[in-house]
Length: 225
Image 1 (cartoon, rainbow, N blue to C red):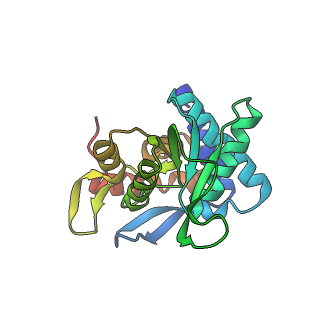
Image 2 (image 1 turned 90 degrees about the vertical axis):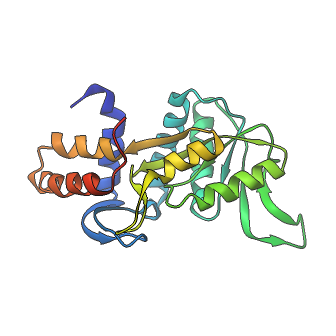
């Protein structure tokens, strides 16, 4: 096992044990037949969510990105931002967080944003980046509040080019977000880490999926470097 992959390998093992990461044959939203599937909604109890928050917090702190608060786009991002904020506080980094409503509220406190006032350097937290739509909406809300997006923090970077099964784009959604907004996308783990994990695994039931993942990356993955 490559020592630099220890944290990523731990996360991949955690996701497998939680059955959030699985292998087989899955059809993606883009209509591609993927040999693996990642569903962050499976982190659905207190212990799993607590552990997940620590992985997010560690990835963010290790990135060295300067930030003042967290923002979670509805719906999955709300729970992820809250879990990450709790994990950061346990490491003596207490920061506020906010999230959005899908529909603006016209009574009570009103508005679209909930939680702490959105200001300073804001990290957007989500599970994955598919088309980048959620990130664009988040950036607009953050800038409209007078703050600036500092980074996007996700669980898994599929390192997959945009488009569908036939029309394949040049860049991934992650690359497009980085280019469009000039901010880094931090991932706890990525497809390269996943392939390294399968390659290093002594579990033959897992190793057998490496050829399919390799072929999928060759067909749809972003260019190395």
